[in-house]
Length: 474
Image 1 (cartoon, rainbow, N blue to C red):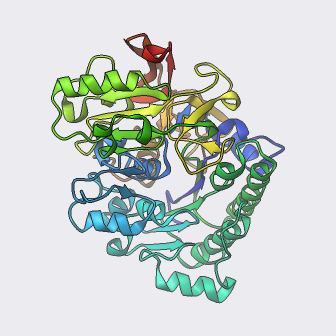
Image 2 (cartoon, rainbow, N blue to C red; image 1 turned 60 degrees about the vertical axis):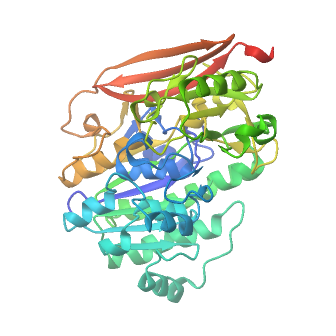
């Protein structure tokens, strides 16, 4: 066990209100015993590869450039980049920088520290947890075939555990396999400074069956059982000094389909990359071109919040500025929009939230990517000798704060991270800083957009966004 060493445990797609003593007793107990961050949030869009990159660079998309799960990239203009596939990411990396801030693995390697990633997530998401792992001399184990896989770790896993089980919903066999790679191989033989185990449930199962479906609740119990094995080993003195548990985003219910590709005028269809985060990559648009696009979007009943103003450009009237949501990188589209909610929105129970979606799930399945509180609210807690015990911090925080906090535990520099060290969680830390919330609002042709953002010591954290009014389509 190395001083400051940390294990990051991620429950993909787990909304914090779903962590109950009945469904997840091990996680609920851990969060009560250590430090729990009651107002933890994801980034925008609340999509996995964006969230992973923000977590492991300590920066939002505005600075690292992984702006969506699927987007147009200047290095590969022939088709949108599908960030879930490591092949697409390596194609981008072969023609220019993949991300524009150093990742946690890069910082650890520069300091002579070690890192191991164990993941059941997609090859793209796993890659973004330590994108230069091979160069850095770090190891990665992924349950999918990937060039990131450490041959030695793969061989040891197969010798001890046999072949990787097939994906299922719930994905408990794969998740427990990955857990054993961590506890039975990585801990006793590697003792890394930082380890990551990424469990892709309940997200995988929730997409298929819904946030509160019996199958999803079963996946929560199964991931909690895997965490219980990790926790028991850690409490017995195995593994690292510190445990940090997190989720990358929440989920709400997908209740109606939208077809931006079909509904928008023909001139926009070839420039649109649709999803929950939708980007219109117009070629060198003048302000009048963007204003016209905003008028068109305001006529669409599925349109949610609209953003403009990338790379320091002013926002178009009737839209919200990209920087308010940690976006606006030069790779961002000139105009982006979310899909609108179909049910209760601001100040509602997250379990009642509904939204439009484009594809990938059936009606009633779980969805994320937007700015509803149920999509943005995340699990975040920590424990170990440098953390307080039995403490709840109400100070808002978000995924980019995790890497600076891990670096601080290790006594390393946080330079080039825009996240905040969560020092109020440390045993010798200060009192939690105060936060001030601002609601930013715009109206266009009767369509109202609102975005609530906290300020914490000069750093912004998104709370949630919502719309009101019926706009031009009433």
